[in-house]
Image 1 (cartoon, rainbow, N blue to C red):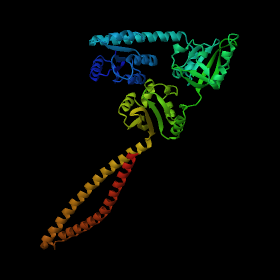
Image 2 (image 1 turned 30 degrees about the vertical axis):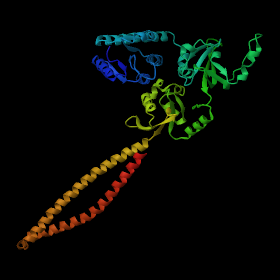
Image 3 (image 1 turned 90 degrees about the horizontal axis):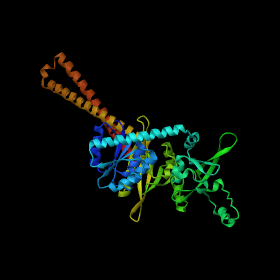
Image 4 (image 1 turned 60 degrees about the horizontal axis):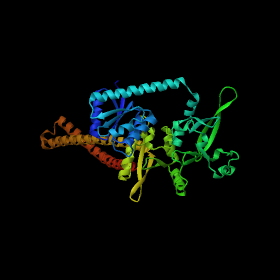
Length: 478
């Protein structure tokens, strides 16, 4: 195999560069070289390489095997593990992942290339088998469910969950295998605790019936917390008139932007939404705790849903178009307030975004990082246009200065002619000599008139230069 894209994850830069050189020698393409384990998850989702080559022992805020499992679960990518001869104890943990290929270091070039080809071939076979299985059991309902831009699932007559979409996984933080087959009543509860009180009083005499209203439903999440949602439902018809399954779609009660219910957070939410800039707040776990509606609209343009925004940013592949995880890790480390200009879009229709990163420090430690994003496309285009005009203006001024210098040379030549006439009075009677003297004096008068005009022009051009510089400085300060 040749031409496959490989993402190298190794915090030893010299080793990573050597590996890249070796792989290129064997006609593999390198999609990226990452030295941070958390950034590797985001990069894998953004680049979708054919294989991730990951070194065990890489330093970072997350365990390497946990990161690998997220890459496999979220993006279904094969991973080749490089394990040192002193890391044998972790092999048993690695083998619990999806049929991994392992290379023990030190290794030869032949061993590495052979292992890469095995990993690629094995993954291709598994993928083909899965596709054949899916094509043999085409489920149009699952396809429709996947297209719904909100958490959704189907349940059968017995109340068991039969299908879910990806946003349902994002909402509950539970996988498909953990949800399918589970009773829907184990996943939801009512917001009003009083409604369930009758269950205890009923005793063993009869099974109590609890009414669950669409506007009083809470979803139980993987961490034990709950989230208030509104339920919309519909039915699936099989043959005949039987209503065999029900579709449930969940929507947040608070709409696009959700904040904590504490008073200070409610106030903070109102402040954020009143700003014309795009704003979001990140904690040390790389989770977005707050954001305003303008940021949400921008995220939607990049294909990020509100339920994806509840995941750590390194699990949101499209987030790399906004900012990289390693930038935030460095900002949390340095606690520095920083500005950064990023360019989006095409050459014909560029979008310039100015980022401002503001740390929130509590008891000497940075707990959150506020990111303020401002669209400065018009300002940046004006700055570049002004810069171009200013540069063109200076070029023209240089050319005009050369003209002035040339005129001075002409004037010097004229003065030499006049002096020659003055020093040779005996030739003044010559008609041709008189004509030359007359023309010379006429040219001198024209040059004097040019000097007057040039003086006015030079004054104006100096004022234009000062004004242009002032405008440039003003734009740059913005």
